[in-house]
Amino acid sequence: MLGRTAQNLFWLSRYIERAENMARLFEVGYRMSLTSRREGGASEHLVSMMQAAEIYDEFQLAHERADVTSVSHFMLFDEKNPSSVRSCLLAARTNARTERTALTSDMWESLNAAWLEFAAINPKSVTGAKLPELLQWVKQLSHQFRGALLGTILRDDGFAFSQAGSFIERADNTARILDMKYYVLLPRSNLIGGDVDIQQWTLILRAASAHRSYRHVYHDRYKAWNIADYLMLRPEMPRSLIFCARFLDQTLASLDAIYGKTGESRAAAAALLAMLESNDMDRIFAYGLHEFLTEFIARNNRVTETLSETYNFY
Image (cartoon, rainbow, N blue to C red; front, side, top):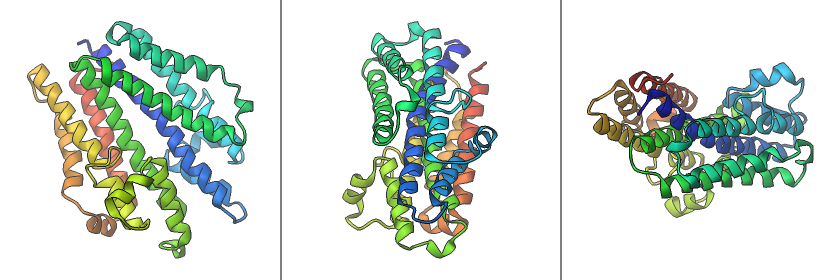
């Protein structure tokens, strides 16, 4: 497979996953802002969410104040924000058109229909109850594309590059959603372990669609320690860090088998997985949750860099 084709398939899946993840991340900040009763609290949660996503500096260049209207437009519709849902869907569709013959008709039709429907939305009409509805729709369109991919594409190198993109992006997002706790609670350490703390952890579980499955695993009320463990180290949870890292390691192993070589990208993926398998929550919290997540995100980015070098992305 040409390096450019591999790159386009990899980023196509990343962009679709990122669109969903932006909706999930914004949903956390939005719901936290609704529960805040302190003066300026709503803005604080939205800022914390953007800091975790590393897009707050870009936001500040165009907006003076972080409120629901400005932040929702920036994260959902702003073409100047390369991580907005609109930018991601447009980039995904562009990549798909470039590699049309590498996609199945179901994949193309799912993505193209999603883009046309989203492009027809008037941003000014997305207010009140329509905002959560749109966020849910963005998540559903990602599920539809993923279902089309898993149900119709050949299990060859194109599939492997697509899956690598999805799980690198998903791991990054789960880490950033968890890292929101650092930004939200850092100024007020007295809140850690309190009702506000637990409420915020619960919202993070909901953003990962994990609030119900959590109960099946722990049979207990929501506890910060268990929630962090669930989203980081539980291999049966499909959005957990360790699930993503294991799937990524297996995917890159399949690429090595297809091309008959062992690239540096596999070593980077193995190091990412080892970082999780060699730890438990006692060690992670002792080390520092924020510090651990920051290192994880950096190592996850390193997998992308080495994958690009190994398979000649342009």
